[in-house]
Length: 403
Image 1 (cartoon, helix red, strand yellow):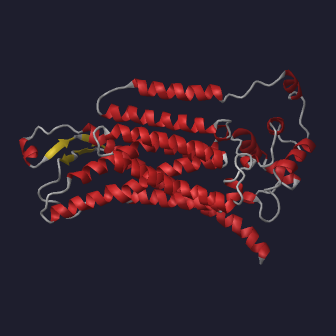
Image 2 (cartoon, rainbow, N blue to C red):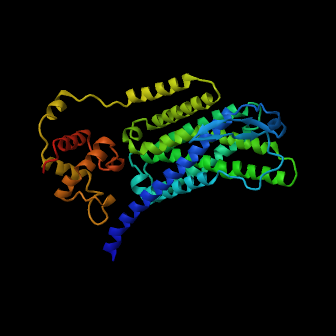
Image 3 (tube, rainbow, N blue to C red):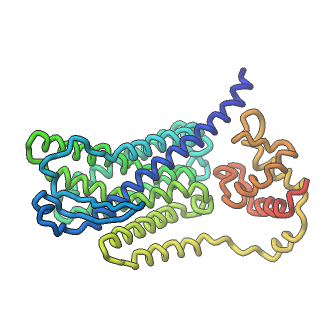
């Protein structure tokens, strides 16, 4: 029975990971798509020329053609005089994205905290459970600090700039702290997850409740509180600037040269800043202002990182060694020392067994992809593989992976 469970549990967890990742991506596409559309729509509306529309309270309209049809979205200054009974609410995209993301974080990271979260070379946690709890705390504290900044400074004169500066400083501090507490891969992910939690919490605690209060007031014949609209707009604007930094953080776990860099927190901060600058370009473009300097700044930041993270040129001795064929015996020794720790026995990670010669050969392309290309394995460099060993595995695969 124990043998059966040890075999089926990793298989089931792999399915859970795949399905949750699929759901998470689908929900995120829906959320980001609707968010980007409404930001574009809001910035593209023009004052109506029809006096009848102005009389009805329409503040802006837009004519568009798509999919063979013509559309005429209209935005009211407050709301129509006769509020429709059926309104479409945009919130399940946000909630589904966060819930599926948190479930995926639990399956991948919290469940394997000792492997995915803890890196003794970064910080020596007394237990994986404590590291997982601290990682969870990033989500809670991140929202509380951000919300406090918005509450205290958001309603003051010039408050938007103050809030923006303070939130940027907090994200920088959180990125630095995460990269000094957790394995690089987990640090990048939790920083992005912290911003994603703020985004979804904005929808849950401010945007949707404010809209519901406005609707309830209008149905009761009362005057809506204008602060609900102002706060909702403020949080919605924040969300649009968080989006591309979050997307980068989610994708970065596939590229170990980013999260394993010596000063990886600088890489994380600069790439997220580049994402925010790119988003700013598009926000201004929708308003009719082409500000190419934002793209230029983003390109400069990314270009600087490309140069800074470039691999060192091989020495003449290494170049000479690379000319000779790599034997399977050498490959076998590397795999036994660096890979078998996780890829052996009934509970082999991902069901891949590298304690058998035939399995090493059959998974040669997987080894090349994970160890050489993405450098994601060994996870957190737990077995301290050397660069020379990575290159030997690469040469062996390129030579046809001979047995």
